[in-house]
Length: 310
Image (cartoon, rainbow, N blue to C red; front, side, top):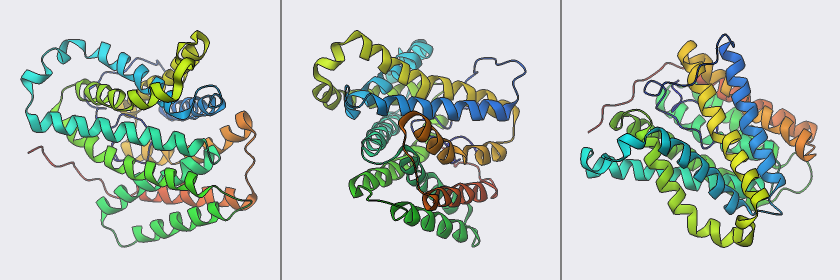
């Protein structure tokens, strides 16, 4: 699966791997790059959640998207000057939809983080890309992966102690937004060269979340220390994973990449234990393994080329 089609991480720019030249990481093995990217992303999520009492989730989402928009806008600054002239209204609308799905996805998963453990939220969110993968393959046996993943999510919800249903609902919404993000990402990547479409989407997403983020953050957004930490979350959660994944995709089959990305729920759960003391029950760990196996199994399916733009 391509980055836009594989079960990957929330807020991660799919569909541009062939168009953007990533940073060079020398002789680091590609699987190590993928795992480092996953770890960076989840550590960023853990740091963000740790700061929620000082900077609410909506404000933290704003900081993350703003950091990504600034970095990508700088990289695509020349192309952005003529983006309105060089692209049709339909292409711009698709890029805007990409940005809105990006904003809502990040908003929803951060709201989920604030209510349920990190590993649980990320595991439930993975239902979105898993569904896209299963629908795209159209193999009857992939229904087994869907059943396995569904059983895993049910076990998560009932695996121990009380679980906030609102947190689960936000994780499911994040998964749905992730599915939309994947579709918009593939279409945007076909219409815009390089990182231009992703830069446009990041700018739109930042603008969409700006009023809510400013209202929620209030005076915290004027605190230099919190601002610096917010930028660090943006770098850990977007810039570093993006660069590492693009480099890995240049040097390994997309299918292998998809299987490695399936480890993300387990990594999220481990980061939750280490950074946030979010201890899960044995049943919940089994549930996470079920979803990981389902995602890896779906990643083994046949590849499909994305349709050409209209």
